[in-house]
Amino acid sequence: GIQVEQSPPDLILQEGANSTLRCNFSDSVNNLQWFHQNPWGQLINLFYIPSGTKQNGRLSATTVATERYSLLYISSSQTTDSGVYFCAVVEKNGANSKLTFGKGITLSVRP
Amino acid sequence: KAGVTQTPRYLIKTRGQQVTLSCSPISGHRSVSWYQQTPGQGLQFLFEYFSETQRNKGNFPGRFSGRQFSNSRSEMNVSTLELGDSALYLCASGWTGGIGELFFGEGSRLTVL
Image (cartoon, rainbow over all chains, first blue to last red; front, side, top):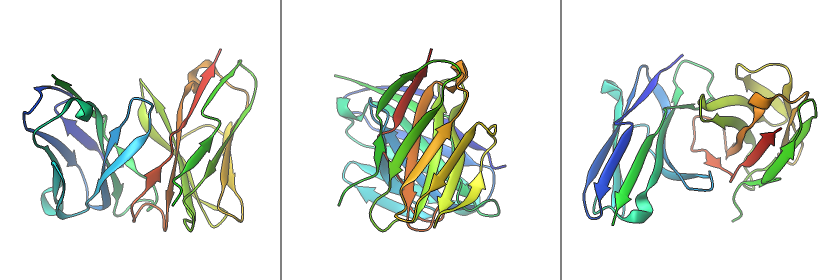
């Protein structure tokens, strides 16, 4: 099956700094989503971005499907951005309903 | 518009018992899928239902089962609980399944003693 790798595994930032989170995947995908897991465990949708670029406030994401990677940009980070960020994909030629997750990136933003 | 609702949020069971978790998807969504999250294995796909039919199943033992009702609400059941079944169980809802955007509930946190 498809492999999803996220980097770096851990990231510590000072409030106000910018960061880039990376997601590499090993095969063509139909779906790519970025999530932020809150302290209570819920996965909060950040972007649905199988290709192209999207922006939402201080966050933006770019997926280059032909090169099999996606980037999540966080600008002017805030302490509330802390948590675990997951990238998840649906393999194009696999079972079309299964999200495969990366292991996540743990972000800590210090005041 | 209500989000994905999972019940119960927290539960404690003992080994050998069984448990049933419920998921109500976003109104109009016909796909419901279930995921297990543990510290060691991360987030893993359990199964997906669409219009009351199981379309896809992950690599879990037969103790894990599910079903979907005509109103798209879904339940998953774990029988003969083991300590390793302690996990956060997350339900996702979508219009068509994995090709479109999926939305997750708050999860059901199961502890097996």
